[in-house]
Every structure is written in structure tokens, then in C-alpha cells.
Figure 1 (cartoon, helix red, strand yellow):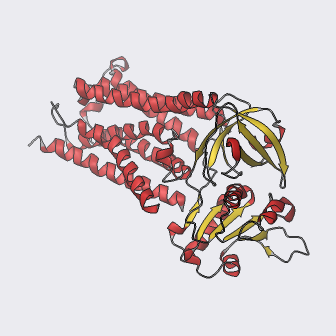
Figure 2 (cartoon, each protein chain N blue to C red):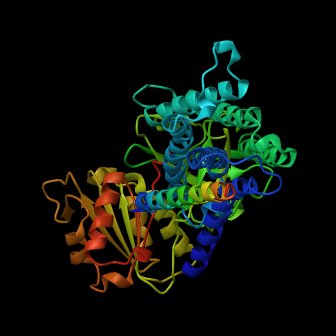
Length: 33
Length: 441
């Protein structure tokens, strides 16, 4: 159960980081236009 | 208490994410180099955040009490292991995306000698990361000694992070800006400082606060208790159920500390602490050779596994040597004259191996304590519980308001998994059961 908690935290971290990396790329590409 | 822990968890999670993402988004400020295509920019963002995540690994293992307390050390170490896979995944995805979109950045020069040093460091960084992960995942199969592995783990992590940073500087794209370069170099220095804190500052502190073994006591079940007294200082206060890192036969600078629960009462005088260690065939087999008078080092206390609300019934579930934190709780409650109802479910292979058996029976007179022994290898005339502790044992021995009790579980991983499942089936809310796993290193 406690490992499951840690695993969920890792998944949440991964989702947040990837989404914000996409935002970073969008912001950069948007500056092209 | 739970609300306070929830707030602390939220704050530390936000700080963790901030340390990963703020340096990335700082790259979008000030003067910017010309933007490239979406794939390249996305892959670069993954690379930067992956490296920041790797650097923060030093913070997760730096034993900061305020950080680890709301979660428990086992959760932090499990997170450290799993999040490293995520970080390596992000870092490796960075060049893979560039290859997939045939980025100009990966165009090979005519001669190997012309490969820019920024690219060479990228290869070194990723190579070090891959070796680090392989050695961490398969250390036992590769038969690498723990101390050697730990040293190489630190060396490879420093190489991966250092080379990753030099790759970014060498590429001179976002970090061509001196301010942003300074920010990322500062971040790297901060990560390395976290490592120095746990490997140099903390051991220095421990060196100045040694302990002396004043008694070595043989216990039932091939188990030894070390009674330790602070030498020239007041020691520390711990909560019953917490643990410390014990270093025997070596200076605290050596990576040989092992985590053990305190088994003594938190009310013991003069900073005295006891650890009760079962011979499990590894490092623990030598504990019985410790002699009174020996100098040892203790780093602690750590852990979130400790007694809860004084008005609730406490159900302590121990398997084998998992009795040690429970013993600390029981002894402490006895010393405090606490009369809350306690039920101890104590699983062991046989009657003779029940560590602290006699003392537990004696403590019944000072506490509202009921003990249920569960033997997996019971003698022929045994009339008590046999087999494993499970939901049926709970139903036979606990008052039926199962969801109102506080459950504390410590024992082998398999037992803890089974009990957590049983409690789930009995609809006991997660907040009502507490466990901390000690096989986390």
C-alpha cells in the first residue's frame, strides 16, 4: 500500500512534468508566429 | 495531526515540482535564441527537467527529517528508486525524439574528431545513467557488495549530472545566456551540496556525538539487543516506533550504516537507546560479536511510524523481528502510565523464537494489553492461534468496531502485504493503518 502511494506520486510527477514540457514547447513555437 | 501532515505533504510536493520546473521555465525569460520546431523544443524541455529530477535525487536521500517525516522513509526511498526511472526515461527520450524527427542538431560531422564536446558529454551522461540504473536494479544479481555499489552509485550519479550540465553549456543554446547559465550551474552546485551534506556534514556531526555500547543482551530467537549510551552529549529524543542508522566497526564517513528500529522506551533516562537485531545471515550475523564498551555511531531518529490518537484502541501487528518498534511503543506506554487498550498480534515461527515473550507477559500488569501469539510451527499441545495473521484472526480477537481502531503493522514484506489486503477487505480506512517497511535499502 505504501509502495502504491509512492508509485502514484511518481506517476503524478511524470504527468505534470510531461504536460509542462509540452507547454514549454508550445510557448516556444508560438513565438515563431 | 493528519490534516497537518497533509498540508506538509502538499507543501513539499509543490517545492519538489518547483525545483524541477522553475529552472526550465526560467529559460523562457530574457533574451531568447530563435525557436526551433515543436519536437526539438519538447525534447529539450524533457532533457532539462530529467536532469533537474536526477539532481534532486540527492535531496531525497539526504535524510532531511522535515521532508521525510510526513511520508515515512520507506515511501521516500521507494519514490527515489521509481522516480529515477522516470528521470532516466525523460533524459533518454530527449535524443530519441531528435533522432525520430531527424533534427539537424544530430547531423553527424565528417570526422569523429569534429563531434562537438557538448555532444560527447551527452553520450557520457546517458551512458553513466544507463549503467547506474542497471547496477541499481540488479545489484544483488550482479553480486556487487553494498558499500562498493553505493560508492559507484554516487560516482555515476555525479558523472551523469556533471556531464549533462557540460552538455547543456557546450551546446550553448539556452545556456548561452550568462544569467541562465549561472542559474543552472548554481542548481548543480546546490545538488552536489546536498550530497556533501549527507556524506560529510552529517558524519562530522555524528563523529562529535558518539555512543558507547553499555550492554549486549542475548534475546530469544537468535536476536541481540545493543544498549547504547550517548558519550559526552545528551543524545536525542525519539518517538516510539522510529528508527536510526547504526554504524558499527567503522567511522560514520564509511557507507556502512544500517537502519534499525529502537526497541527501548522513549522515556528511558540519560539518552539511552536500545536496538534489537535478529541474525538474518547478513551484516546482522556479526552483531552478537559486539562487546560492551565498543564505540558506535547513531543517526536518527527517523520515520513516521509512531503511536497515534490516545483515545483509540491500538492494534499492534508484529511478524518476527517486526516486534521491535512495537516493543518500544509498549514499553513507552507503560512508562507513561497510559491505559489505552492495546492488542498485540504477534506472529512467529515457533514458541521459543518469540523475542521479549517474558517481558511482554510481565507488562500486561502495567497496561490494558491483550496478546495473541500466532505460531506458524506450533507444538502439538498448542491451543492458541496457528498459521498466519489474517482477517479471521482479527475477527476472533478484536472488538467488532474494526474501522475505529488504529492498526500498526511491522514484519516481513509478504506478511505486510497480506495484512494490508485483509484490512482493506474489512473496510478499514487507509488513514487508520500505519506501517513502515524496513527493507528499503
